[in-house]
Image (tube, rainbow, N blue to C red):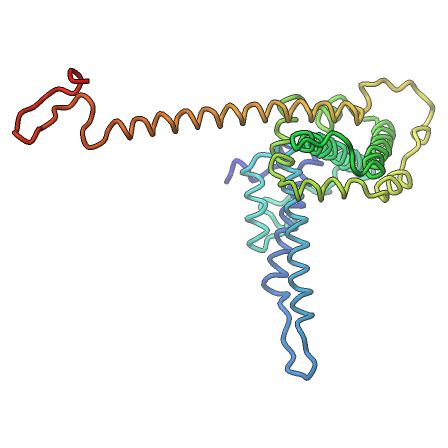
Length: 313
């Protein structure tokens, strides 16, 4: 475990905080599980409301933790770090109680700027995840022979939501005056990283789960929240020229990347399935050929004489 005990030494702060979420959500889940179970009142009219509330809390925490794990995986965090964070939380250890303890202050020397980086990271993740959801949703509909959108208003709202998130992320990135390294960490996802994202998300979603995510991304409140919490670019001081490389990829570009990643992972999966089918067929053929009378072995007849099956056949 020594190799994964100090994630803050090898990860950017915003990725480290993804692990913090996983660990603390695991901690809260086990606390509710073991210490939140309600007492039963032996009084007339008592029902199961309290235990239902307890179960609801557990389900909500479990769902939040699962989403945190998915995001961490999609952003390439090593599985040993994720497993350690979950295990420590399950054993009642919060992030700030880790040994050795995380650095203080937890958000770096410039708290306001770290908050802006977190905001950009959150928005970019929403954009990337939504892009993958849109690409997979379209792909599955086409595979089912459906070539028109049955809910055009909701589909249009998803794109509007993405535009609002992108503007907020871009404005915040300019205000924060990100370094080249920070930009690369926040949105420099190459083809391999896009494959990691779709494998961690939509390739694991059933049709029902994918539809749930698609409908969630169509909520108009996403646009409203993004526009309400935007940071005007001119708030960073005197105006300056903003170059495209200083901004996140556009929603359209992200959707294209997601579609390409899906095509590659689907091709790899199909090739793997074909290889497995060929291997299974060969194994079956080999099994049948090595029956009671293996090919090439002497055949003992009823009279006790032998004959070579290779010659007879």
